[in-house]
Every structure is written in C-alpha cells, then in structure tokens.
Image (cartoon, rainbow, N blue to C red; front, side, top):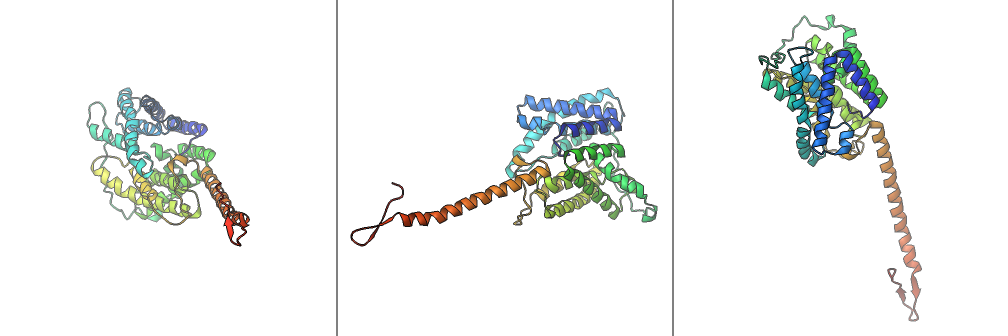
Length: 354
C-alpha cells in the first residue's frame, strides 16, 4: 500500500487477522521468509528495512492460502509457501536489474509471477495442494441485473472492500482498518485509495460486470493501487497528476476486465497484473509539462514528503540561479575596476587570474 509506517503495518495485520487468522499467519510467514532470504542474498539493507523485500512475500503467503481448496489450517500448505516466498527476493532482484534502466519499480510483479506459477503447476486436481477451480470468465450481460436492483449500501461498502481486496480480503471491517492505517501514514494515499476503488466500482457498472464481483471489491483493488501510485507517490502531487491518477485508475479497471477474462481461460487469477501493467505505462509517460514531474526512485517517499522535496529543490535552484546571475553582473564591474590607464594613452587590462 506504499506506506512505510510500523503502526500502519500493525493495523493492516490486525485487519488480516480479523478477516482470517490462517491467511494472516501465512502472510506473516511469507514476509519473514522473504525478508530473511533477502538478507542472505545480501540485498540493499535500507530497502530491506523499508519492507521492500517483504511485501511480495506477504501477498504470496496470503493469496496461496486464499486460493487453496483445502481451506484453513492445512499445515502442509506452509511448505510451498516457504519455497515461493523464499524466491521473492530472487525474482525481485532479477526484475530490478531490468527495470532500473528506466528507473522503474517492480511493484508486485514477483508476487504475480510466483503465485501464477504455483497455481498453474498444481491446479484444481492436485492430490496435495489443490487450488480453487477458476472457471472462464464468460459472464453474459444479463438484462435482469439492471440499475433497478442495485444495492446502494453494498456499492458504498464496495469502496473499502476494494481496498481490502489488495490482500484478498472481502470484509468491509478489514478494508476500514486498512484505510485507517493509510490515513495515519498519509491522508493523500488514503484519499487516492478510496478514489481509485470508487473509480473501479463505477467502471464495473459501466462494463455491466456481475454485481457480486463489484460488491466483493474485485473491481476496486487494482484501480486503488494505480491511483495511489500515480497520485503523489511516484509523481509530485499537483492537480494535473491528480487527474492523471484518476485516468490511470479508470484505465486499470478496463485492463482488469480484459486480463481477468484472458487469465481465466488458463484457470489463473488476475492478481495485480492490471495494476502493474497500467501503472508502468503511466510512469513511462514523457511530458514537457512541468506540473507532471516523475520523481527518481531514490527520492520517492510519501506524497506530502515528495511535495516538500520539490519545494526545496525549486528553492535551491532559484538560489543557484540568483547567485549565478549576481556573479555574472559583478564580473563586468570587476573588469572595469581592473582597467588602469597607461602612459601611452591606451588601456592595459590586469590579468584577473594572477
């Protein structure tokens, strides 16, 4: 969720236990194994302490438990959980070596790759690790699912539920705790999470998606992540980048519809592929508009901190320009002062470097 705050992490963990203790346990195990693996691989210590080598392991652990057909407390599931979580830093480091050429983050691509590999390798009929049977997403656009039978209360609840679906949770209480965690860390991130989830929900209605999918937040979580990423995290927040974030959230919702249908043919979940692909496209935008300023990865922080960084950068640039202009104005005066008359009536310049 792009927050580097221990208190926010504790609140999110509490929300996970509120949803399902077994899922939360798998998520904690995935975080621990992924972090230890990164330490053993001697990855960047600052990145490890910031949690950048743990969050993919968290998602791998949780979603492996979510998609397991054996239900909760199937302890043998911890074995593939440990193995796949151990591979998270490996995949992340490999992808970073490519993405760093364009100064791009890897987001949740390691999680997407590893979970899809596990589900594709096991499947619904595996004797030890059976997965939930994912059917092709060929829902007909039924006429009886009209606006007349929409539940307004469930539509409102789908906004926090969509935020909770980032972790595979469909409880509005879990989504509410996650939003509270975001609010404590960064009000801007919390706001864009709700805006993105609402944009995904409205896009699902526009595309005549099944109401149960909209109510369960499946149309909101990718758009929420995209809106957060563009709306102040990797871009300095301005009204132009705010509109860009909203556009990215809507585009991500369309991509969610397309990718979920394509992946369901292979009996695979969409995971966060739509978020990764749509956000990477928007981060590669080239614009001459000064208000659309993408930050280098080395200085990316909270939206509020990013704005302070930009103000300080502009102030230092103005100071350097004023100092340069003042030095350029003083240079001709010094040259005139250094001109002395000679006895022959001509003027001889004194070498200023002597």
